[in-house]
Length: 294
Image (tube, rainbow, N blue to C red; front, side, top):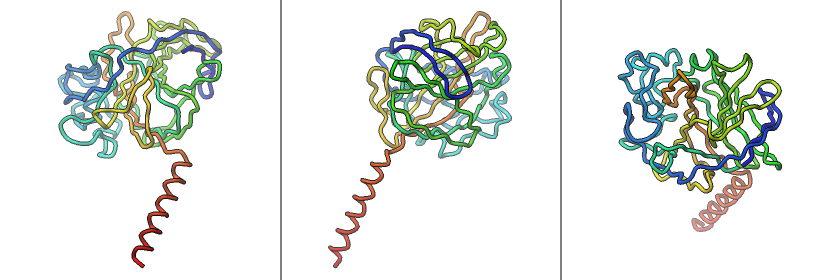
């Protein structure tokens, strides 16, 4: 994959080139009960409560363990606990997360092309004080025929949905100001482990090795869909949960990596032709039923 950026919404940039290798051995791992530490890169102690004794990472948010009264750094949002339709369902082990060969190693992913509904839950912590004091900007990116990236910013507020269609594989990006960067510069981190710095004109400092893991991808089933070449092969009505981290490791800034600074879910939608076929089949079934009754 080559990293070049042309933006559609929000951030203007010209193309830069960078080869990014997809991480190997991407697999789904059953999510353990949230804790401060343990299996899974997401299962970290969060800095979003005063004592760090309460469990406030993305697993706790998605499974209903995180409460505003305990995770006081996440107030006010009105989003904790998430509703039953927003949470991962079931008891005990709930869903799975995408990880590397040892669960904690770097995870790089893209999503298969298609139409998706993106449901924004909100910037649950996301004050981004370590990121320059501004809310993180985020969105998705696709590839054009030259292999350049086209960035689209998602600006929907909590509780709203955005529907988009892609004709190529796509991933997610999050942007944050760097405390040491020149005014106006923003670091962009991509879900396939690329990183660039962008200002109003150009991309600079693009690197694969300097990228850090800013995304945690979850699915409701413990098996998860297949992953081939770093691309998650979603099927219609497959639903995913995405947690984004608004801090990046840098000298003097050890991020907590709790992945609940921006939380959303997204679902692949059936193609209109699939709906039509389904409707035709349903009509046929009803017709056969009527004939048998007669």
